[in-house]
Image (cartoon, rainbow, N blue to C red):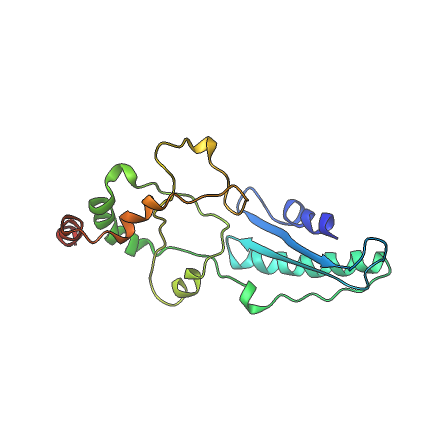
Length: 183
């Protein structure tokens, strides 16, 4: 089942135009090594860069899972709850343009890095679909650590260098006056 679900992105999504992720992160079933479990539960995530791709991937999950189950003489129940349907997290371009001088004044020009859209899932996306907003990251890497030496997110070796959070929570007078002056 998992191998078949993993083919959805490579065979159904136009990867030259967008990205998508289908991940099974939890498998639970059975109570003994020598007894075939009556039921197995798999939990995962779907991430896309637009609503059309998300709809396509969800449809393909249903089709693939139902067909694989049928081919094995099994049944499948697919639950794609609303809570797993994170909207795409899109920044409001006009708001970003307005706030860029403030970000530069507070963080410094050299510390601003524009990134391409990513397939992360973030609660902020629910707000961004209601009001103009933008999402930015403060960073959490020790400046002395090379990027190649960092563990990826969602892996056991991932570590946040908490000193990076100072920028987002700094209440020193100079940081406040810099932000106020840039507004």
